[in-house]
Length: 485
Image 1 (cartoon, rainbow, N blue to C red):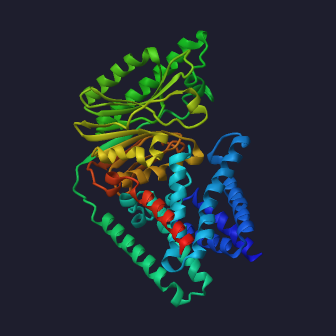
Image 2 (cartoon, rainbow, N blue to C red):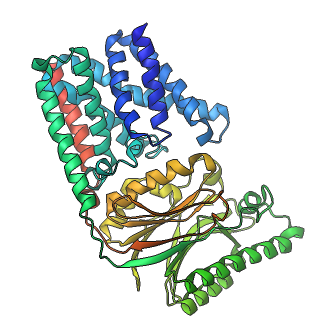
Image 3 (cartoon, rainbow, N blue to C red):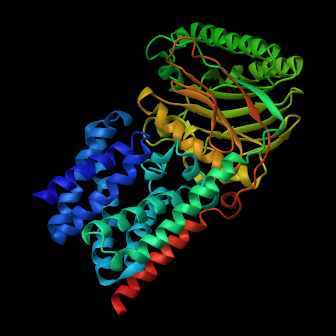
């Protein structure tokens, strides 16, 4: 009964840390789950673990996934099974090993399953426990070296070492090696991470940036969705065109206002500006005139609607430099499964990195930034700033911002993130928030910040997911060793 209660508590904490940024809970939850599963029979322990994780994830993540229960429930069942797999590998392998090697099985397994889930399923990096460490600046810096996978490993190794101490009653003769090894690693992380933040340059060139958003009540309920889907009655087309024209005027007026206040980069959220395909050239010509006249770079998240097409929407990021030249027209490559994938023309190719008068800019559209290997283009391309245009819903606004903050650290770039129905923000290359605005808050339509323009080389940008691949190899080696030793 005690083990079952521990399992419930640990699973509840696991559900919480996949939803909220409460760093200490992640460190507490894993040892409890490990101790419970190691105290129970293999079959009953794994079955109970899956049920507990399934219930916890279902409760804590229901509002983050607005979809029918018939779709949501199987997804949570699969998610619980993926997480439980790491505990299963630990249970059948670690008991055959001793010392430090035994404690390494779980962190390697947890890192491996998170990495494979991100690469092989549509979930990308959603649900990674690494994101629970948002706000713990020294640990966040691990992402610049090993990506978020290094943070997952650090948490997992603490879980297994703490569980060993718990199970042995802190018998120093049994825990000395693992505690010393993990302690040396975490001390290195805390010292190096703190120094990385403390020694960050303060004399770099800065750029005043602004993000804009449409008025919260500009469209009637459901109208923006109908337009995006191309469901416009021919008799209503001129009225819709007039509505969109007023939206275009509002954005261009906002650009003039912010440019005259000193902004040199002005960004609009994903699909925040809708335009019928036939009207796109005229709108872009107007935007180019504003950019050139005001000497400002515009990063435009826009949805171009092709009426009558099976896939009517082009989800684009268009960047116009301060001379009025279009330097990027990027079509989103990673549609979100479901509604968006059903209406969107899918782009191909890497994320853009371009030189402008104000520095090198990289761009991504919302869900694309949930794939670290895709955003590495910004780091490899020497970008000074990464513009991520996003479109969200209220339940995920904080989660998604936290995820994207790690992309800035991984690639050593500043992040400019205009978000519709979410949190617009500017974040520096060390993950520190420079400015933020909530779409749903009064006067939350505009965010202004001074953003450093500099590229900070990182090992992650250069070598990518080397640590995750090493974790897979290390886990395979330990499993093999446990069978032949």
